[in-house]
Amino acid sequence: MFNLLPCIFNKKTISNIKETKDYIVINKDFENNECIICLEPMVINDKVKILECGHMYHYDCINKWIEKKGEINCPLCSK
Image 1 (cartoon, helix red, strand yellow):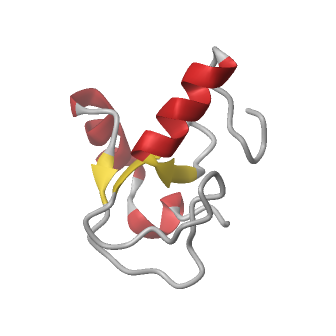
Image 2: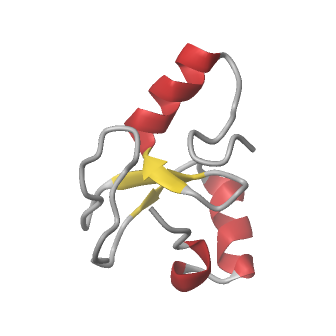
């Protein structure tokens, strides 16, 4: 998986999203974009969460990961 954050949003949009909710709903299709936790593709209307490092995961997948680990750390880069 690659970091889609710069491709989808500018910094102003991201800060507005973080202030209002902790997830976004995908409104674009991207090739080769899958959640590395469940290995399923992220498609239009999926609820996703972007961590501070910029990596994106399905909202439910990353929340379960965080709950299991007991801390917020990225499964991909450990930040």
